[in-house]
Amino acid sequence: MSIILETRNLKKVYANHNVVLDGINVQVKKGEVVVILGPSGCGKSTFLRCLNGLEDIQGGEILLNQKVLNLQKDWHDVRQKVGMVFQNYELFPHMNVLENILLAPLKVQKRKRSEVQEKAVEILARMGLKDKLYAMPKQLSGGQKQRVAIARALCTNPEILLLDEITASLDPEMVKEVLDIVLELAKEGMTMIIVTHEIKFASLIADRILFFEGGRVLADMAPDNFFSQKENERIKRFLNIFDFQ
Ligand code: ADP
Image: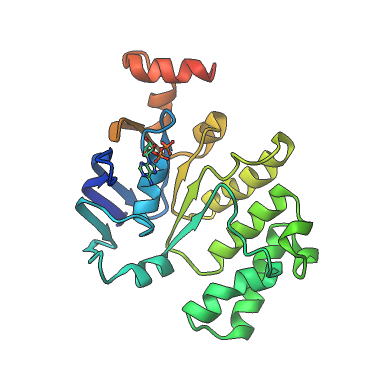
């Protein structure tokens, strides 16, 4: 399978000299679901933000479809191909659901309204939100808002989707409705990098687990291997917190 996204020796250092990513080497193949786990503050979210051009980087390379990105120039194109969903939905509060979804396809991608609107309605229907087309974000539950945010990302036809703690702000009863949609997307072959604390979900969905600590990839392994880890004391300690084993 072809590699869609790759980082080589990726470094992120904040202005306060805080080295947050200390040489990350990762490859993601088409159709793969990679889950990033690790303790709070280890750089998971920063890594995703770097992949979507929301952070500048201080070293290394990012490759999309095996082409090294020119980080000064290419972000406009990259964001068309790399979709991202955030913990706090990031919907525009003054726009209804459909307007939120159509904004980037019409204004940035310059696609035809009729084509995009048809697609938006189809995706919203799949998400169980067909009756919410004209609802404002404040009229929606957290789970509904997050489903709209996923629909918005999908409507730009991304080649890869980055999900950053997308259930972390949700009440427990809404977590499942969002995770079920992500499981569906995985079955359909969507390439994804997922940061989550939902460890059971991670074990169900991941083709590979990356374990981050201190801005480095401490382990890159198949989920079976990760979740039944007997040797690596650090991973065992991490899993013990979740009472997983
Ligand atoms: P995680 O997602 O694994 O919890 P983050 O990527 O959010 O970790 O943060 C990694 C580290 O980067 C943390 O120590 C955090 O305090 C630091 N950090 C995040 N944003 C900034 C910033 N804008 N300036 C300085 N340090 C930051």
